[in-house]
Length: 400
Image 1 (spheres, one colour):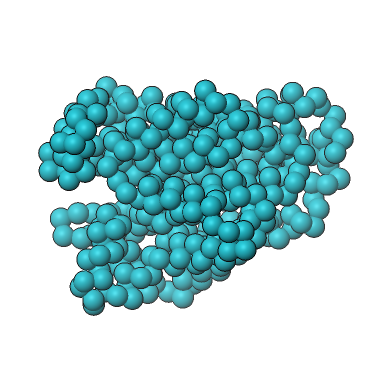
Image 2 (image 1 turned 90 degrees about the vertical axis):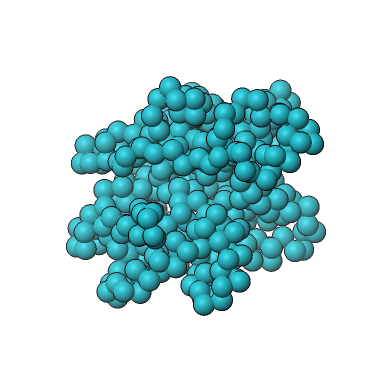
């Protein structure tokens, strides 16, 4: 591909776009029309830059379906109710798809982005954990969703058998910058898998495997461990089973939120599901009830407004705690089927690159009980998915 600008300048533009998207998430500019305009302006600059490099290929047929999906969703948002964050997410998908198609990152460039982003996030997480700043609120009142260590079985076991290796913790589990354990443990798992499987620099690999591992363990949650285990399993199983394994993971991950509703009258199964999902199973049941009470248009095209609040006893939930259910609520069954089809396409191609396939599987499993993996609360995960897409397309990457 001929470029009218040097690769070095292109790399600066692409990295600036990725980090601006990340910092917007991290620093939480107000979620209103100004936020939407800022994202649109940033995206248009990037698209214009790409068009200036290769305008003839910008509107290839391969982009036609994506354009139709994007503008179809924008139309639905205006027709059935506007959720600004959802519109931002749709536009970001368009920008990232085109950016990574034209200028995919090298492995080193991707790891550089992941590791620097994690370092920034960890810095703010430490400030939140030690009470120096309030948790980032993302439009709601900032709260800290941590748990006591006094009666934690895993913590007491480690202390009794190994000693107090968690000397840096006070009496609560470690949390991320938004005050949640699930945000920092999932991010840590992604960094661990990415660096351990992709990084070729030993010192960098050791640093960004060891530190995230310590942080992950400090949350005392099993979900990220399961995600890492699922990814590494893909790496070690025989090649002839990799395609079947990845497809089973996609089916399992994208439908798991339905299981609690199916077994809602079986108290033993429901108790087990709640135990393994940190009580998310009961939340999913309530959200599915909301879906079934909705008009048909909401089931097909999404609720197209703010996700409804769910009341469970004295607790109120403003999110479903599952990326898959969150996507279904926001964009409906048609888009959900299109999204899962894209996942199947990725899995079909990633079986030829086992290390990237393991990263892909890890993300799929993490998204089961985390609301922010496949959304724009932390855009790092979406950027990772598009990085994987660009690598399986065998595009010539730019040096960063």
